[in-house]
Length: 259
Image (tube, rainbow, N blue to C red):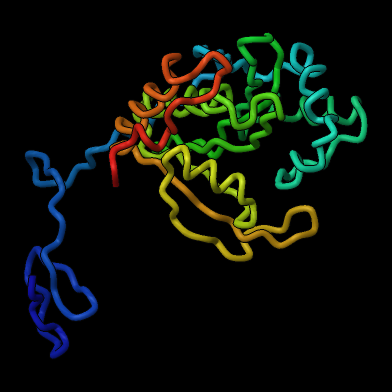
């Protein structure tokens, strides 16, 4: 649409707004009987539940240091511990006692909801993840503080662990589910892309963690995008998509509509 030229100081027509080179029609909001604009959003969104979630291959259980501590310490003290903790804000635990303090803080946190990821095949806690940056005022949340141990990373267990929380959040009507990571963290960025996130950009020199400057990569899935992604996850997780050794027959991206 061609704007009305405002550079000569023309007054703004009613119902239009000033842009860089002129006036454009303003967006129309729903109005009440007294012509007062109304928001189409609720006053707030429900708080996600700190509760167990069960899938075909895993369970998510609210983090309980007494129940999950030994299993998770076995993951955290694995020979891959340095790699697993490379991009996390927490240091590699130096002892079981130090790890217990980390778990107690995570379980008691009011800023995030920490969950243990239970491998359905073994009954052991093989990882943990958190629901964080929860905004009931804006209908948004984030999955973060992810540590999937070597026995579940890259498997259908980890994929389902991601899916269970995402499906709960969007089931509550949330508008946005985000993922952020160090821009140099290639595995995390590839995981976000595999899960169907849209890349939003980089916050340069966003944080200082472990004595290093961090550029943060941001990703999101929005509510109107979730139904197609949800269908793709459900079809990928179907037991028929795996052979006898648990290897996928088709990739997750093959179940999503072409963009």
